[in-house]
Image 1 (cartoon, rainbow, N blue to C red):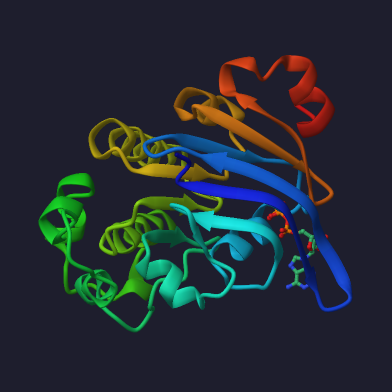
Image 2: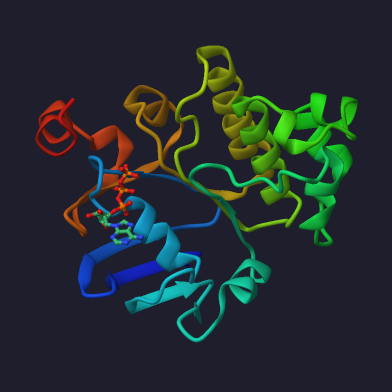
Length: 228
Ligand code: ATP
């Protein structure tokens, strides 16, 4: 059974419609790359899945209709979001950021510390004094502390230095290998996405225009829809 099912999803910002016909699905343990040029609706799709904005169409997590639920209930059902721009709690410490969101499960401070050791070496450092890369790792750690079944990373490595990006891609690969967690990743690096994703969905102007196995994503399709 699918963990996440999205069909005919439409959503608007006021009078301006951003999503028209988004379709995607994901099985437990799978990694899905959500792709598309700038402004094609990736972040809006993520917001709609997390119930941060209203949408229409089918939206189910483990067979449960999410449309009636507020975002905090969706989070409790096992959806962990690393939002675009990270949004750590700036005035809280590293440790406080991690425990603020914690829910019971396998993911504890120790386990998150095994993924990003510096988080446990500098627990008292305030989030606003961290580098962008450190904030992104903290945001991933914070999402993991909610013990999600599905982790969504919106712009996983955007704007980060190459070494940090590598560290984040390694962490995502390790999550895939060791945790069995389903993951949706948005990122500009087709190369890195290709190495880690089982499936891909491409959006164009708020519509799913291609979906399939990552291995089937041909240079022609990438050129047509992604411009690379
Ligand atoms: P990017 O890669 O640039 O982040 P995206 O694929 O994530 O792009 P969205 O941010 O989902 O695209 O934007 C989809 C459409 O919705 C765009 O036309 C955008 O201008 C519009 N949009 C996004 N956020 C808002 C908002 N808060 N209010 C009004 N329109 C918005």
